[in-house]
Image (tube, rainbow, N blue to C red; front, side, top):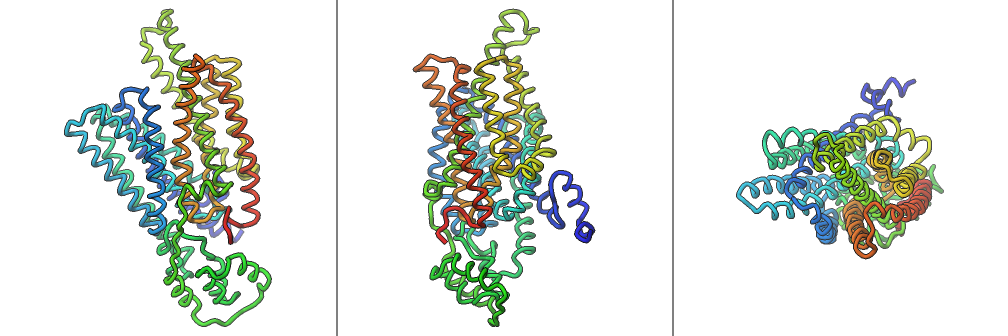
Length: 516
């Protein structure tokens, strides 16, 4: 009862969605607003990409260019993250992308050929979308402990789902009234506003959680992608539970974090007198380079847990994008048949297709929002992350089995709505949670590589798959559904393995693949 009285109204309201404890509601709602603005910025400029590109067939080739770009940019981002504190890193990267939008707006006003506009903007937005979103969720992972994240991420990810819907609605109103380029300026403004919220959350969380730490060991001073720092042990030394010399030796690499954790566990009642431990640890930390030095790709490929997550993201995008190509083929054929048989009510093939996709996306957005509000947190609470990971591949298995055995558009539509809405809600939330047990360096480097490079690599594999299937084997796109079933079965096995490793990491309290 005492804890209930201390809860603020916002904590109580958010408890309708998930388990929110005293004082947690404000940060959760701010983070949700933060990612709402980021996704709204992306969604408001996404139609500009489609308007400028012109030739849909070019997309398949451009995704290869995106992967090459990310292969160059991800290591660069890792080096920057290894030098800048998280607030400065997010400020620099977000302002960079916001200024890019302003630059594009001005550049396209001076008569750059439309074909060039489309290619350049497609490459840029495909990088922007994955890198900025991955950076935000690295920030959210950095703020929350594993236990907090499992409870509060459903609120945060709701902001992402709602932002995607709001951005699309804004773009639909702005483009007819002000032209195709103005959404770029609107997107830049939304990014800047999101940055104001990021800075406020960063300052708030550091004030609440890091006031007792030496300044040089706070997130305001340490690089975002820092080495694993024994923060709990630092607090133990400041309170006199363990010798300060042990923590100093850990910071300088002369003793492992595990060694002093064992010492702390075996002698919890000890109380040592050590003068000004906080100042001494601050001085030691200032003399040591705390930045992480491992490259993002090496980090992923050398750690089985991170590599499995990367392959999961790759398979998910491979399956999902492939499914959309399959259903696009069916929609085109249905539209043509309706026009040829006089059942189109005066509509053209393009108008029938546009109407169908508008209804499809509306259904996906509505269902995903409802799932995020009322289902996601309860699935995670009662079934756990490891079981929640299996739900989307099971739905996908049903979707592509239906497409293989009974390819009727109406049933395919609702099966794909179920798949996409679960992906955007439950699966997106759980996928972000997989990084909660990771080190800060893994969150800012490996997560960026996985959420950007591995994600876009899935798009390239879709292109390769359908090129081989339709060219070498003379298959129609809708006949590729059995191949997706094979991918989903691999995905299911991978999800089981990741779920087991996640449970082990949470139970042990140790980050994946750390030597300490």
